[in-house]
Amino acid sequence: MRNVTTDRSYVLQSNPRLLDATLDEFASRDFEAASLNEILKQSGFNKGSFYYRFADKYELYAALLETVFARHAELLDKDYRSIVDTRGVATGLAAMISSLYRLGNLDHRYLALYARLYDELATVHPNLKLILSNSPIERLIHSLRSLLSESSPSCESTRVFGNLAQMTLYHLDRVARIDGVWTEPMKIAQAMIHSAYEGENAELEPVIKFGTVDYDTMGGQTPTDDVDFAISSGEIVALVGRDPGKSNLGNLINGVLGPRSDDGRVFSPTLVELGSKGTAMIPAGIKSNRTLRWHLRQAGINPGSDREAAFLTELGLDEVPDIRLDRLRDAIKTKTEFACLFASDAKVLVIDRAIEGLNPDDRERISRMLLKRKRIGNTIILCTSLIDEALFIADRIAFIVKGNAVRIASTEELRSLYAQKMIVVDYLEGGLAHRTRFPLESLSKPEFRDFIVTNKILGIETRAMTGAEIFKMETGAELS
Image (cartoon, rainbow, N blue to C red; front, side, top):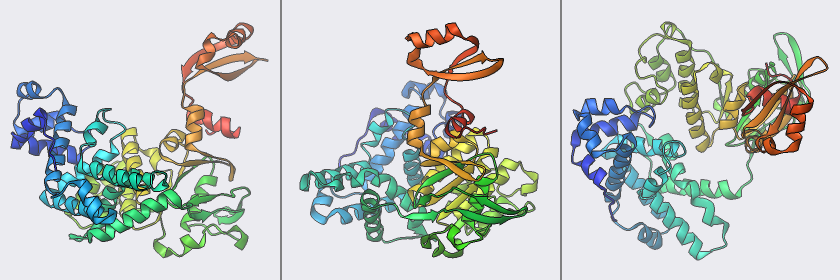
């Protein structure tokens, strides 16, 4: 197939040390975290020579992607369309997976870069999608969709392969390589196609069903009178509130607490059949007198393996794997728990307030890893008071007040209601301070002007609503 080589990628390929340093940095770090200074230091390239050839760090990143795409293309001996036309969809996808194996065998950093790329599509640069369109994966997906569209233009299956590239990479990242042995490509291809069709056409299967539940705690029996809802397979649901209700629901899911009556069953048969490894929870307890590497080994990750290196890099723990946890910050202990959680084979992950103690950068790292787990089929329950984080990562939010789910809404609906900036007006009425909000377009309308004129105004500002304000709007209760 045709290779796409630009001036910038030619310059990069002509400088092996620069290429190696660039690949090393971008395969191990997010685009924002990757250091151009580190690349120049490791490659021996001076800044003057660099800026003569590249406009900025993004252009170097683009050149690297073009180089990797070209090397991947060389591993395919036929045009993508002919692969699909002559051998069928499954065989075409298997050929793609086989080529990814060979790409990974050339240099494991290529696959790491590919997978990281899909995580960053929405945040790095608007032109990134254009560069990605020349990648072998995207061109195969385009051929698959075109072929299906021509054979049955009205068929719903023309949309099936929309996210197949991501599915392929996450599938490889999760299960394709076990103890250095590649899984047979056709098996993965068939599983991927089945998953794609299931995702389009099948009803989501409930994994967890809540009813009216009484359960035992240290303080005695505690009721949850109104939590009648289900959580589906592959869904991220946030239980948001400030009282113990959300955490108790999380403990019920994980089996830490037990329901007192049969009519208060928490688990559907689907989850019960998963057995003891069905769920994993944070916090679960770690040994402070042990190291991070020790904990990863207990979770089944071999010391010095590529998988261990990937975990350490993705969580930002490269420099501390052999230091005892009691000598490290609490945030590192929390990230150690997340590392063990992500290393588990559990189908349902329960996270009880663990994200709240992390700084914004670490919360973003964890959020990306949770989204990865969702893409490979995990069901995730977040017990949190951070509505902003929940709006970013969850599919639905259950607002919990005194043990009751008083409102359950999709995050898409909530974002449409609250993501836009509003005019927030604090005013005095009856000797008490009150707050109200107006849409931005109200600035030019008489209703807003009349309100300002007829009330004693304490303050006016334009901003998005805070998580606490959203919680109060939805429940009538205070979050803090």
